[in-house]
Image (cartoon, rainbow, N blue to C red; front, side):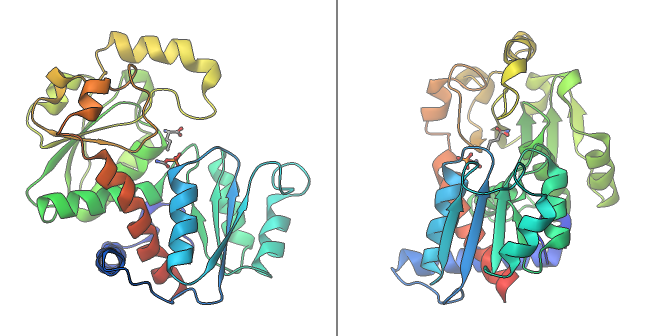
Length: 298
Ligand code: CP
Ligand code: NVA
């Protein structure tokens, strides 16, 4: 199976991946590794930069007894020298799993359609399901499950937010989403959340969004590939009061997928405050993806 969107997993499968992640986290903490990927190779395709996704996947593959190959935009023919479907079929003859970070979501869909090994979405313009796995693991650990916690998303309604909306719907997590009107979540994503029985509350008012929640989650205002919209987006978000400051955060926990642009979507003080759980969240990328790899390769 492929993991292109968070709801490629059912709720039960998602819980299985999170349980595997927690087990592997405990084992790694005791210095042990697993051998799930013994002799197996992960190909990692990147059209955009990455710190966490790249290093956590490569480290994860090593800790599972396997090997990972980094393939940057200048290294292979993907997207310029040959059609995506040809890359998918050739790589499938060599490696056991493919992870790809690309601009156009349709490209991971094509990779998945033509690959004979599992394809994992490592971020597209529309979705970041691996991030959602780590986010849910972080919330589950901190709040002992999803029943007694409410989250406010305050920021752009694109990739990270969209996967989180559907992930929250899958596990029954209460969510309020605040975005400026013009940067909201796609209707199809909200419809899917409703279909799963948990459409988030939508607002354009950050203060209203955070008023009765336990966690505030944000992401950059200018995503990779949106550099030409920078001035326009900074204006729209800052004028509407979307920056996470100590005042807006109060005593709520702060989540951020990172990288953070201090002084834009979040202040340095808020990010460095004791309410910030961003480093647990970043660490959990490793454990969540190891859980995912063992699930996909089982
Ligand atoms: N959150 C996340 O995906 O970070 P990177 O861009 O560093 O991989
Ligand atoms: N929304 C951000 C997330 C980075 C992990 C981006 O797409 O650049």
